[in-house]
Image 1: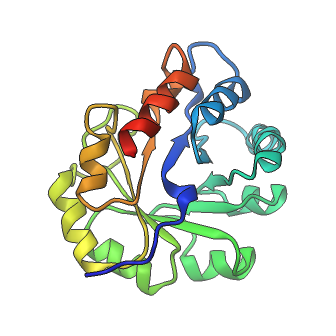
Image 2: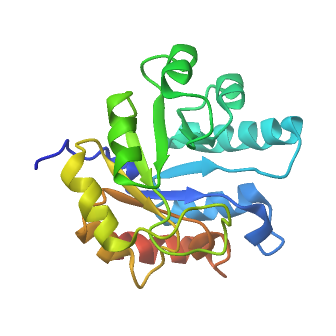
Length: 211
């Protein structure tokens, strides 16, 4: 089954996690990562106040906007609205796509996490711009996910949906190419860049692996 041409912005997502930054500021890590070839940054904050989340989002927006790179906010439509983010990524228990679209408008990227083929089909039907297949492999950075879908899970979803797919969960330099070959248009990584001694070098190598 053919699918839409990939939005090149979705090739290499950095999903942030400050607890993995080895004491560096989030802006410092993101600045390095985008210099190395990250094409999209998803700000994920699970354990901070709304004000702190907003402050981090504003800093990243200031960094990314002049570079033409999208800032996607995880879960929080209110934060995305407040900072004029380029997109929002929603989980299965977050605001429904239709409500998010009404608030954010037609040009905002809306990604949705899918833990099954049915989730992916439903997200496409409801108007998602891309699907985050989660998790592809088991991962220690997110403990509330369904069992890993594996490469076969990506293939099954690719057969059923036409919108872009981004794999997330346990993706690193050794398996990123396999994820792409299985049908994902891009990958999202956390620790492979956030925890790297050189986030820039890690991003450069990952871009090279993805082709």
